[in-house]
Image 1 (spheres, rainbow, N blue to C red):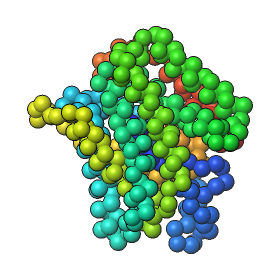
Image 2: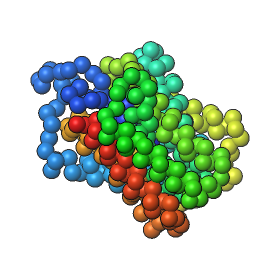
Image 3: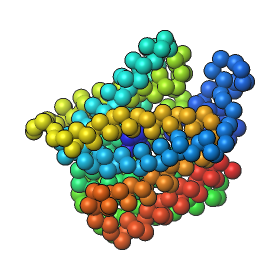
Length: 328
């Protein structure tokens, strides 16, 4: 959700495509190899190493990238510019290749999804990181798959016992963060951070039911990014966000990194969803928080409190339990 990708934020909306084992990727119909738009056959781990490394490193680093970009960009403007450029660029690329763009019905569907994913998900992370360290933010956001499991349970899907253990452990880890003071730098920032994975999970659940576009999932995701970026910019202007001065080289480079390299992470994750098992594709969720804590401490000069030391591996284990329970 960072960037992500999110990035696709967490930084990207690809989480919405996560299906149960045996179901076709991206929520589309089951297609046979050789047909137009057929899903490629699974590949070995060796071929997946580079895309996996890209998702692990890029998405794990976007939290520190957001923190640096905030030195020169207001938080909502940061998200708005980033996702509007990325979504618009992908749509232009698809149009140049002759792909069909989303129609009116798909644009309307992208409106609430883009708002939840890129304003509520990524925008809230940026608002929180004005006062809270990037490593702590990554640990809290990593609970997103646990919220997905909880929402699925409320919707009637019965989680496995292993998944319930993961949900309980993950939320206990967030409670440890709060009790240790790492999550209490600012009440408003804390609320934004706690709501971020809830918004991302809600948008992901809604996105699973979004109408398919003739141009494929990339066109749908790009429309969600573009709308989310425009909404974040509008909300930032409405709440009084303004640039006090031209951003310096350091935040500008961070913005370029988040927009360009973060989008590469989005593409890598898209490839993984089509070529490897869902458990492996979503394994970034318990790697990113650990990497974000290390980068925030080593490169960002962020203090590493005892509660973060305890909570980061606990959240990683919780998400691993939940994801592998779904995979099994």
